[in-house]
Image (cartoon, rainbow, N blue to C red):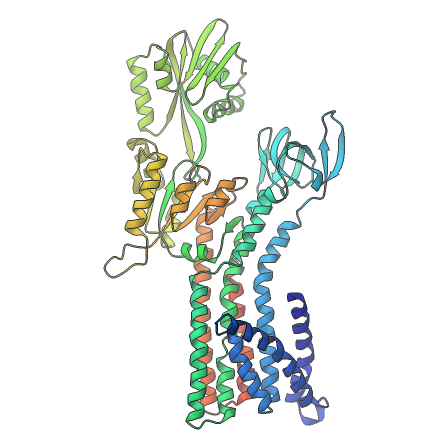
Length: 626
């Protein structure tokens, strides 16, 4: 039906324009039967407007189309053919721009959908390779992705290495190196290398499909600004109709009343407000930020407080080895390192991965242990060359009855106070070495926090399970004054709930400290916290279902720099909408002044309204530009 109306509107524009232009030319250049043609075309243009007006009345709403129907009917009755033609053009363009509001979101969706792959090569159990349609790929299938191919599924690399372009999901142009164990996502491009990927998600379950669904849903969401515009339209139409009867009562002619109605038709603002948000949401999606609707954008533009988890948000969530020490003359630092790497080689723990990565960077040979046992979350028991070894946290080492010197205990406490974690190494019942590791702060975190404050954020609050000294050290490095240490996951939820009670809401004269409260987390472990905030932002949402579900805004790339960027988009959108209302108000006042002083009649009023309609609508597109 929409497509049929679009064709109808397009034909109206093509037919009305030459006759309308002809009516302004000298008589010798008139197209024959111009007035008759304009009357017929205006009458045809009245049909979709009347249908829309009655639909709104049936739903107990007053729409702009009701006001336009009355104006168009008055024009036809008064034989104001030029006025009727301009009203027809005005309404036709309004309908087309309204469809542009939807098309902007669909354009982003289509640009994502074009990345879908139809033919896929899979590796079978007998190591043969066959090509199948994407619909025939199942979870667990091994998919081959060669140099230049698009990724057809979400999955994990089981063989090979490659540099992947993830710009279609994250908006980042930098290539990401993938190796065995790395996650890969649909629509990303293999720029160099070859991979075998075990399928984890296909079709509607992939990250790409979830992005498409969210962008589609965002276009249908209405925020407070749009709802306020709707309420304004209702009252505006009612006042306009009452004013028309009052003017008629005081003796104004039908021609003068018609001119006033033609000036005040507010179809432009009704289209411009949602178009602004749709343009901004589409632009953010192209930059790798998924905004679940205009309400989230509106809240973000007013944000005053940001509560944030530390790990995975202010830090990378990936420990890095910063120091290795020996406490026994029999073992050099290299000897301690080799044994630590030996224990880590068979473990999948995040600290063990940091150890093996350090070994790889320093090109150290890792020996496989003769025996190996991992105690989840505690430590590792392993054996090599008749030496019984333990590595892990202090509490684990103590529970096994190992000898620990006072100096080692003192050094461990110092490391913890400095915000570092410690893994101990014990050989044959005695601690002989330790390794200190630290979660890396995100690059430019201090500058990013300062940037958000310049955009209106009053306070950042860091919530962490670290001890007091460790939390103080991290907060000092990144410029956050408010930190809350020793917090359990349940404690974070309770804190956010209480903080919301004390700070969330519209500022008043009595309490100017209130404002919008935002929470930033990694979306996996912070789902409950994300759900409590006025506006929630999840970091690194690519492949993380919990992040996409729990948050209002999902930054697909694990990049904190996107936060001030999306805040600027929200601020710009809010400014665009304010300017649109100013444009509408000023143009209406000027138009009414021209009518009141007799400078323009119905034809001039219709021409004026038609031309000024393009100002707020054109301004709305600025929200979707850099």
